[in-house]
Each structure stands twice: as C-alpha cells, then as structure tokens.
Amino acid sequence: MIKKGIILAGGKGTRMSPLTKAVNKQLLPIYDKPLIFYPLSILMLAGIRDILIIVNKGQLNQYKKIIPNGNNFGVKIQYLEQDHPRGLPDAFILGEKFINKRNVCLILGDNFFYGQNLSSILKKCTQLKNGAKVLLHKVNNPQLFGVAKINGKKIKQIKEKPKKFISDLAITGLYFFDSKVSGLAKSLKPSKRGELEIVDLLNKYLKKGKLSAELIGRGGAWLDTGSIDDFYKTSNFVSSIENRQGFKVACLEEIAFNKKWINQKKLKAAIKFYGNCAYSEYLKKLVKI
Image (cartoon, rainbow, N blue to C red; front, side, top):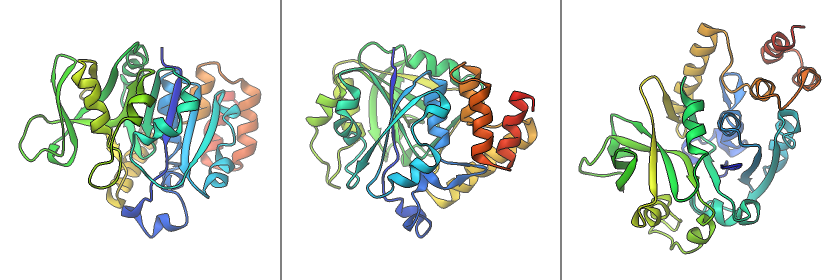
C-alpha cells in the first residue's frame, strides 16, 4: 500500500511567461482554485496522507499562505525547495529522506485528472507492492508525448515523442514506484538537455519486466496545463463541470470530510479562513450552515 506522495511543483514555467515571472504556475487559478489543489486532491483521493511538495527556491512562503501544513485537510504536508529543475527523477533524489525506503507516488504539479472511476483506478495503483506503474490516457497526437505500447496491463515498450506510430497511449504525469526508486534515480545519467529523464527511469523497471499500467478510460480526462492555451482550456473544463453539476472539483476540505479525516469544526475554520467567497459558500452546504 502506497502511503507517501510527492507533488513536483518546481520548474520555471517558461511557456507561461510573463505570468510565471512573479508567481509559481501551480499557484495560478484553474477556475476558482489554485492549480496546486488539483494534484493534491488526486493524492488525497488515493488515500495518501503523507505528502511532500517540491517547490522552487524562494517561493516557499507563497505556498504556505494557502497550504500551511495540511492539518486543515487531515493530511501531513512537508516542503522542499529545489535550486533549479533537474528532471522528474530528481524528485526521488531530493525526497529520499522523505520516501524512507517506502513505496511512493509522484504527481506533476501541472497535471489535471478527472473521471467518475478515477478513485477506483487510484485505489488499484496504491496497492503496488513492487515495480512501477503508470497511468495511461489515449491521445490524438502521440508524437507530442511519451507513449507506451502494452499487452494487457504489462508495458512492452515506451518511447518519448515517437516520430513513427507505436501507440496512442500517452504516459501521464502520475507515477507509482516501489522503494527502490531513489537508488535507481541516482544511477541515471543526464540526457543531452542536461536533465534526468523519467523515461530512462521507467526503462530500468521495463527491462526487469516490472512496469505496468492502468488506463484512464472513456469519460475520464487528463490535461497538461503547461501552456497558456491548455491552462485556460482546463479552467473552462472545470467551470463547465462545476456550474453544470453543482459540485466542486478538487475541493480538498470536502474530500477530507467525506473520508472522515476532518470534522465540522475544521470545515467551519476553513470557511473563516477563505472568507466571503463562492468556495466558502460551498463549504457551508457541507456543514448545513
């Protein structure tokens, strides 16, 4: 059972400059909530309560204003500052002490997931005992992504941005690894662009026959908010869902309350913290104020 999770929320966010010159991308709004709420909600839906958030150096105080330590969500949150981006596997090197030789989940801070069956998929993934598991999503333009060729749920081949078609199943920014991940990440060599590559790490598990997958099926959504266009498409998606159906996506207090991680007292404290806003009005419905 995976009980530890890492959110990689560093990076320069250059594709969204000048917006990201002063504010970290994960603190910008996706509709009515900061982007960081969405990956955090995925870890919480997976039942993960011990969480490390890796942020850019100098931006820690910005995060602590909105997410101090996780107590208000019934989880434990720690932070680590990153000097500069060194690639996704660096999260397992920086977070080695946090991981403490346990199995761990990594989610990218700019990835958005949504789907009715998502909780059950996450539950399957957290049952990982050894090896690694990735979440796959079908895409129309596989040449823009890292993709996986599968047989059942076993991955047979992975390729970064393939020029020739091998699969239309993109590897999303949600990964599950066993306790060996930090050691394997340390053994990686930087690529031509000077970073450690997640595909190289996954290939180490693939060569041992220990890389598997879960698929986000029809009706599920995975969006990468790395560009301005994708960022606002995601915001519009959340707006449409919330206004049509009347419930909020990634309401952290609601997830925690439904899981009985927090009580009504914590909900009322959250309402006071957020002040007079639509988010607070939604929380009031949960405590029937």
